[in-house]
Length: 599
Picture 1 (cartoon, rainbow, N blue to C red):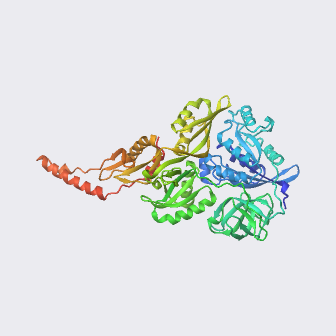
Picture 2 (spheres, helix red, strand yellow):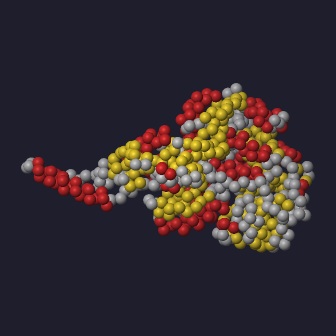
Picture 3 (tube, rainbow, N blue to C red):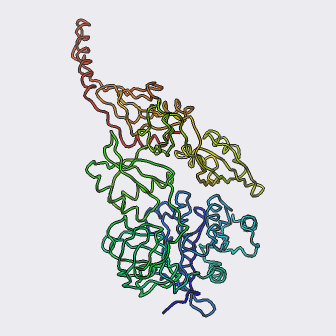
């Protein structure tokens, strides 16, 4: 059956974490009979075990549904998106390939920071917004209050807000009808040269790389000779099709629809998310615009546990990057850990997920160094250096000034937690830029603060002081000069470069002391004393000692002269001294991780 462009609707679901996006997607699949009752399970689009365990969506998923409305057949392409702030890049890609969005708000919690930031993303792309109030079946729901919040936020009429319960399925059909009535059909020219936007890709060990795309103009058929605009590589479309629960091959993907292409691509670097596919014999004039490059917020080193697994780690990261375009990496080496990669992540959760997925999907066990952000260092020679790593810092005498990235943070919470949240932000060197009451008991605070301060444990602390009620979102707003110093950790006088960090001068003493205390607990005792020192340049600011394990050499001396005991102790002392010169200190992986979780 050929589908007319007017019968296609592309939409995504945007919401804060835990507001019921994946459950709503489940109900839609059920109502449109995309899934049989036998295949139905909870969060069916969250295909990774990790997503089900943590109860969060990590990847965007595209799926096609057929729906009959007023006697006509329609095709609905749903792109399910994550809600966590660390995965906002996935959301931006989904939004770029849709014409409309369902804004899902939990009736028990009201509007959260992530809802607002995703909404602004959708408005920038001129998407048609359909507000949906979910979880109306829950006893603690406040439909009237939350409806008023939505009306204030997007300026619609109260009756435009659709009420549903994704769990019971109540009100979901009305949402499907609203999608067809309100969201415009795709606006491409089907007779123009082919122009298709790649919004995701996956690696399949049998068939090579499968790229997911949305056809903006023209159409694509099996056997077409295509080329990728930015990389300039040329292929034959061996198979094209649509995304249902499985890949369903089709002869042609029409204008405005979403599909996949398999063309035997072997190397990961040839597929760039955001690239444009076009035909070789009838190419389009220019690539599709409006697709932003990902900006990593946080950098950390990933090193293989076994040094000979370096190449294996490289190929795992390349395959991983296909499925997660927001990961960037480049090779680097460290004295303590050998060869590895310097990776850019969107946040701490992203780092944790990447590490876990590398282990589960590729069997790669990796060591992660202390995460940090990138700084601009102005030298006395007038150069500007981008420093991602404390070991890349020039000597203190050559530094004119250091600038660090600042963010614009939005925190929404109940007014009861106003005091503790302000105290936390002040500790993290934040400056209050504005406050705004959303309702009588909900408050939005806007702060400007250094990115390096939120990298460690800001999010965890915010959640615990607000009893889980605060939501937080941020974006970069530029660089500012700052008084930063490089803090080195020395073990027996040798710097452990994986533990060194750049830190604000006011916090250095405190942080140095805490790290030394923590390491003293975690480093196992050896045959000799281990000195753990924190130093800024040549100045030692804190020291702890891991005491040696001693054998009681004087046990065989009973009675007799004290000089006999002294002689044995002297002999032991010499041995310990010699041992210390050749002995090395092993730092367990738990020590690297513990440094991240210092309270």
